[in-house]
Image 1 (tube, rainbow, N blue to C red):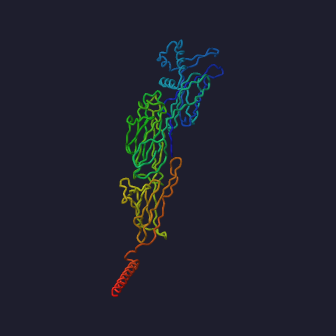
Image 2 (cartoon, helix red, strand yellow):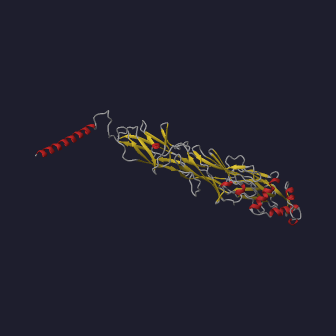
Image 3 (tube, rainbow, N blue to C red):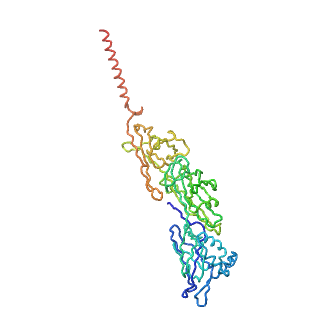
Length: 500
């Protein structure tokens, strides 16, 4: 089944929440932060969100006015900024003025990244139990920084959500809407040909059929992630082929319209191909710029044949950084999977009485008239990935049960031409046309195959063997006698005419 993975780019979630303490009725330890997610492409489920207070609130005796003071352990951080006196009369005022003036996603995210190392213990936290919301409760009055600490135990890496920083106005109960930056990994099949190709395509499919020795083109589509605040970034594709597909080792990588293949680290290890795009290349492009990886693989003799439950499925994943505070933390997307199918011919040779006929010899050709080279093992023929495409190599013979099985074919039209009939039977006058038709569902999986079973009838006639009855020899001898008699009569008439 197709699985288009949409997973968050790496970063720590950072949001600011400001609680107003101007309301006397507001209890100082009952504040809440509600985190919501409106993006169906990601999930909050299993993620832990932690709130860190960066400013305390102090009131006058009547609780009619309030000020902000730096909460521990952030004092040393703000001291290290050397904030100008123009921002306030003391460090608390200057720090608050500095933070409250920060705006824009990039600037806010940069600040959250910078202060992350000074955060200390969380004032409150919650682990989401669903995809779309979580609430941190029991918070004292203050100004908070909230981080998504991720989901280390998640089996499905699609359950990742991050957001840029948001600054709310005064309220005892704050709501934050996540804004997820979502790169994708989507593998598709671009076509089937007789030669290797790495041409890109605007369209593709999740399933295709091919015959042994043909080449199947593939394409992985992704995007440049949000690299804000990163100084390094892991961005590595891994493509894993089944044993029935041999990589052509012709990977091509483009970002936007630029060919960056020579800048990438590409390795081929048997059925596994990895492609790493360096940070210094990715960082030259804007977020969401298309990334394409194109390549092909040859279908070999190990490929499974339908109705095998293995549709020669092969998959791609993307490993990426997900925390710019810790470059060792990475995630791998769920796989994006496609299928390559091969089919069989099931031929039965019979006479007019439906009796099975052994010894019928045919050659097999495709719709273009090309001979299909075959090997034989265990009573079945299989398309060869080594023999030349000649008539001698494309020959099949019906067995003792009148059967001919040919494995490793694609859907399409084929021709069986009889070159030797069973003993005592007439050779077929015309080739036999066969068409294999495959039906696919939306996930690129075959649901039905038709046209691959055929019964071919031979009629009795022709010359009988010399060990049988007199048969046609009677007609041959009789014809010769009549010819001799005719010549004798003609000569006799000539002599009579001469005597006269």
